[in-house]
Length: 199
Ligand SMILES: C[S@@+](CC[C@H](N)C(=O)[O-])C[C@H]1O[C@@H](n2cnc3c(N)ncnc32)[C@H](O)[C@@H]1O
Image 1: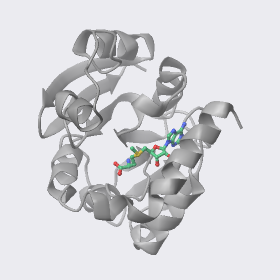
Image 2: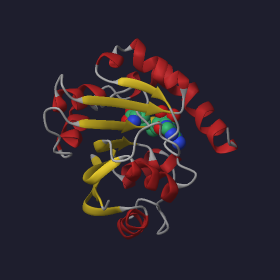
Image 3: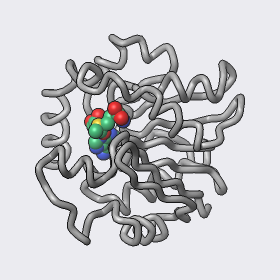
Image 4: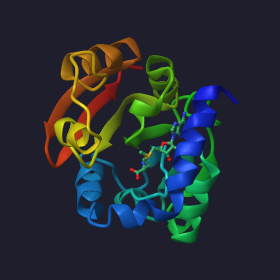
């Protein structure tokens, strides 16, 4: 386990029990972001960095009972909170690092990742691993229920031009990682970047 992972796990372990109570009104925003993936009945989707599994009910609704929904996270306490909330009924929970996913290549139609990329020590390498498990033409959604400026204000910092999620930086990062960015939205009430797997 790297130092980065120890830090991430400590950070989210301390927040796991209260995570859903801190953001009680985000449900509709997650549902709208999931809809942007264009999933079909019977589809196969991963929630990467699923945390307490807030997106899992919407993902399950999108693919129906015949679909496959997986939630992967590095922090056991977040997955325990997901199970306590009953989210394991909507998707299978995996204790896994997105750097090395225990999934077959090209086995998924889509990946949803909310609040994940800012925490990755190697965003390009990790996005390449995520691309590996998605079929060519499959879709990635990088989502946050708050836009970049509003999040920075909440955290008491300012956004610098080297911000990973600034549009030109993210477009370039995705291109280097096996993705083609197809849409980018950064407004107060949501951040959503969509990309297609180049295959
Ligand atoms: C900001 S939280 C978001 C959780 C959830 N997606 C949500 O929207 O409520 C980020 C999550 O990513 C997980 N995470 C961070 N790095 C990870 C990695 N390398 N592999 C898997 N999960 C990771 C953390 O444990 C944490 O649960």
